[in-house]
Length: 223
Image (cartoon, rainbow, N blue to C red; front, side):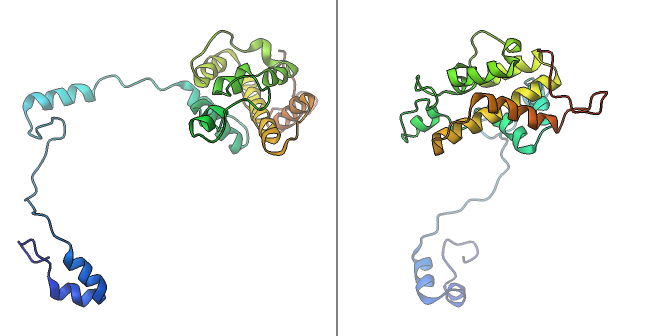
């Protein structure tokens, strides 16, 4: 651009660019420019006032939203990183369940495991009969929170408060295996037996739990 004008410096443009590119650039109009000025972003007028400054300081020192302890609990799980990530995605409702597929107009959204209704996050975690069967087989079902919940995060928050560290770790590993079982059925039409899901969860846990007095890994809890 020519200094203090709204015109291109044609000579420089032609020196830097190929002929066709230079022609297209020179054909582009340049909007009128204005001098920069300082804007106070806390009010719509952009002008600072002592009142707006005072309000900003008050809001800045206000109590922040309490962060759920669930995130810290998930981040400290002594499991494979991919299982921790799964737990986070489950709590964040970031898994590709049927309801999300339906919202994207890519399918009917039905639960492929039970064929009973739309596969929401809570359905995938609690309501699906196939999931309930695996959880019951594991024996941890008697410790899990009952009642109605709005999100899978709400349910996991209560569960993390009811279970001790090892039990909650077991729960996340169990659901990781349940989700893998679901995906194997949806994508490969292969159904892993319920008993094997529970047993494999114990195998995964055995690599992370402390040893007992006999030097063996503890894989059972008093549920």
